[in-house]
Each structure stands twice: as structure tokens, then as C-alpha cells.
Length: 473
Image (cartoon, rainbow, N blue to C red; front, side):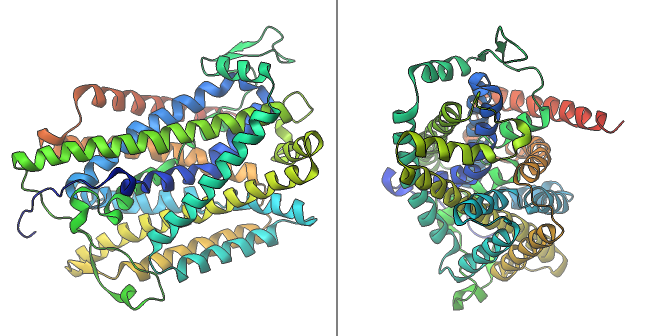
């Protein structure tokens, strides 16, 4: 393991910004842009409480994942492999199935095809997948490039959506949003008197999918530990970085295990300072920016699509309806710019998803391979790109067999990922309790919150699965 080292000093807050942008962007194309606006277009803003609760849950989940990486200087996958030998195959299989289903890029391709006047979007989707593979393969530093793209898209796209929403939303729309955050829904054809929390007829699968994607979702939350290590936060300062495929350094073998901390009083004090910094960064960037983005997109969907004949059977045509509404109320160019922004945000999300899932599977595969060959280092980059292109090939095959409905693909993948979240919640927090010194463990109130979230996902997942099985029997 090597000599123990002191916990590194903190860095300025402005240099800390990064991982939270990436993890936030991973949910943009699934939850923020598609699923929550879709539910609002059908049922109104009374379900907005789910988005608020979902992203709040994910804030606490992500911080416990970051806690492990800060203290250990390694990803949670390294620690879980030591405790649970079945963790490696589980994370590889659940990640590939959950995120290999290419719903997000299908949505981007469908919006892009509408803009370009194409009637068939699957060929555009296949081209987009290959383009993403090329972008990730050519980057000098995979994480560095991802962070730059993500920051650019979020810092341009979010203000643009904010301006559109402020201009187009009515006072009654803002009031409906405020009521929706506490579960009060407006009048529907099936419920003229309104509803509380759940409207009649809402799909549990679609709601659970949106809830799971109020943020990143599934095993993607776990990549927060990889990004913390890649940025060199906390004990990650002593870790190595992964290079691009076509760089000489990509052939370099990397050590996946972290460096042990000495846990002196000085180190514990430094950890506490780090914890305050990363908690604030994640609260501002992930929770606040994520909640504002979701709220604006839901309100925009409410203003442009709710009560205008857009039903659940319409797939993601509500997005096209939003563009038409914006164009007719402002100027056609703004409607087009909105659809362009949506297509880019969806594309960027798929790029982030493919990067994150490839990291997850590569690291887990590498851990098992190192155990079998009794090595302490491995060429992680080549394994990463093997999984990357395997997912692209899988998505391409699905499109060729005409599995191309964006909403269907996203919901199926999200339900799988909700179950995966239930599993990793239990594993990671049990590991933190057993492995981390008490001085750096979560306080009791945080552990209680995590236990509540664990039970929520467990119960909701079981209800959803039973409801889906019931449709076939």
C-alpha cells in the first residue's frame, strides 16, 4: 500500500468547480429536458415536487460518494471490489444494460431530424453515436475535455432557457409551479377538482424514471468518485489521470488504488475544510442549478404544451410543440434556437453518459483483471475505449432493428437505473460505515437521510415492477 500521507491542503473555490457540472449535465437529456417536461405537458405542474425531492435525494447520495473518494483517493468501485466480489459483474452488467439503451441520443436525433426536415431519425442517431465516440477518442485528457464541453453547454443553455421562460410564462404558471413543489396539482379532465401529488392515470414507470433522472441517476452517480479523483481533490491529489486514446500517455499503466491518509489531527481538520468546500460546490452547482434548470424547463413545457392536446402517446412531440409555441409568440428564430439548444443539450448528455459508463465498466473490469493476473497497475485507457465503442455498437444495432422511440427507450433505461440506485445506495453507505474512520464518517442525521432514501427507492422500485408485470398477466 505504501507509506501513509497527510491530507492535502484545500484549493480556492473557483478551482474546485467542475465535477458537479459534469454530474448535473448527465441528467439534462433524460430528466430535465425530456421526462419532467413530458409529465408536465400531460399532467401539469402538480408533480414538480418529485423533481425537487429527487434532486435533493441525489445531492445527499452524491456527497457520500464524494466522501469516500476524498478520504481514499480512489473510486468507490475499488473499495466495493474489496468488500463484495459480486460488485464487479453487477456494475458492468447493470451499467451496460441501463445506459447502453440509447434513448437520449434518439431524442437528440429526433429533434435534429425535425430541424433538418428528415422523416427518419435513426440514421442521424447512429451518426451522432459515432461522432461522440470520435470526440472522446481524440481528447488529450478525457475528463478535461468533458468538463470544458459541459461548462460551455450549461452556462450558455441555462440562461437562454431562463430568458425564454421569463418572457413566456404567465403569472398563473409561476403560481402553479410553486404549488407543484408542495404537491398541489391543477384541474385535469379526469380530476376537475385538481389532485394531490399523484394524478389519476400517471404511469409509475414514467414517474420513477423521471425521479431517478432528477440529476444523473443509476450508476452514473458513482462516477462522481472517479471525477473527484481525476480532479485531484482530497487524497485524489496523489492519484493518476487517464489520457486520451491517441496520446502516447494513454499506454501508461495506472494504479487504481488510492493512498492511505495518516489521519493526524491536521489531516482530519483539512478533510473538514475540504468537505465544506465540496459540499458548497455541489449544493450550488448540482442542486441549485439543477433545480432551477428543471423548474424552468417544466414551466416552459407547461406554458407551451399543457392543455393543448399533447398526450402521453405523443412521445416527445411536446418538445416540437414547445418550439412552435416559442416561435409563434416571439419569433420563428427563437423557436428554432430553442430546438437547437435542446438537441445540443441532449447530445452533450449522451456524450457524458457514454464517458461515465465507459469509466465505470473499465474500472470494474480492470479491478477483476488485476486480481487474476496479480498486478497493481493496468492500462485503463484501452479498456475504457473498448467499452465505449461496444456501447456505440450496441446502440447502433438497436437502431438498425428499429428500436428507436426516444421516450420508450429512456423510460425503460431509467427504471433499470432506479433499481441500480437502490443497490448502490446500500452498498456504498454500508462500506463508508465499515471502512472510513469515525472522524470522517457521516454524522448520524446524514445516515438517517440516506436510510430514508434507500427505503424510498426500494419500495418505489418494487411498486413499479409489480405494476409493469401486472400489464402482462
